Amino acid sequence: MSTPIDFYFDFSSPYGYFASTQIDQLAKQYNREVVWRPYLMGAVFKITKRQPLVQHPLVDEYSARDIARTARLHDIPIKFPSKFPVMSVAPCRAFYWLDNQDGDKAKQLALAIYNAYFVEDKDISNSDIIVEIATSIGTDRGAIQTALQDQSVKDKVREETDKAIEHKVFGSPYIIIDDEPFWGFDRFDQIERWLETGGW
Amino acid sequence: MSTPIDFYFDFSSPYGYFASTQIDQLAKQYNREVVWRPYLMGAVFKITKRQPLVQHPLVDEYSARDIARTARLHDIPIKFPSKFPVMSVAPCRAFYWLDNQDGDKAKQLALAIYNAYFVEDKDISNSDIIVEIATSIGTDRGAIQTALQDQSVKDKVREETDKAIEHKVFGSPYIIIDDEPFWGFDRFDQIERWLETGGW
Image (cartoon, rainbow over all chains, first blue to last red; front, top):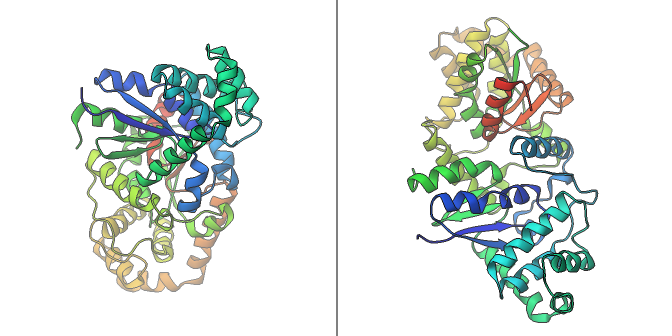
């Protein structure tokens, strides 16, 4: 098996959510593994001098339409969150804490968090909501509650965001395959071609 | 034949250039015509509070790579312009002046301008260059020189840009099919599906 694919995303990103529903299945077809790397995109916006789409007139309206249309095309369920975007610190902490124990379980948690936010309209910036989601997939309530306040877990999220910046990651989804970066769910066609051919 | 497709673009936009090489052929497959509508995207950036990609650290570097990779994938020739972006006032004036006389010839001019900018690295913001390009496709030199300074031609470009804004256009390419907007060359797969199915 070749080098794993790096999948960077922010838990508040609709296109990151779309990517999360497909990336592992796509990679598997080409015998590749995927390392999921949530990070805090807000920290990167300061560097790139960018802002969330919703803060741009006209673009915000178009984006809502594009998100709904893209979801329908790919049969991905979505109910656009009433609070958007949100801070994704608590989801990231929960993810990395669990990832340190069980990578597959952490992916399961990530999918459950995305579903809670983009399908069930739950406010995933709220730590109590994250505790509920984590326990719903079998995590010990006391353990996750403690983890969300643990200094080493907080540090880990900061480190992972710093590492993302070092790798010049700035969007969500942002996927790196053998040093080749692909930004956006709309690059999945190029990603598939790249995996198939090794580049062009 | 159904309603024509509206193809909005800025002459300084690489993804607009990519779209220009394919939009007519794609539309023809579905028995549709395309109305080419160049406009001044800079005027819209003020409304959307956006800036060209090159003004965003990290994004600029990624975009250069994405543009080259996308061009290779679709076999579209490109040599990234040494001066980028440029003001596209002169190209727009030449286009609309010619379009008023001969729509097909205006499209031919648009393709020649894009080729001059994105393949031959000519500065298309320079009126003299636009005169050269127009004469190379058979336009009378004196006529195009006069047209570029004609007040009614200047007004036409302003009107067309205002109309684009009224239609909530903000990017390049920005394509509207029966009231459905598609932003970006990376929406060509959705555009094709939409033309095929009439929507989903």
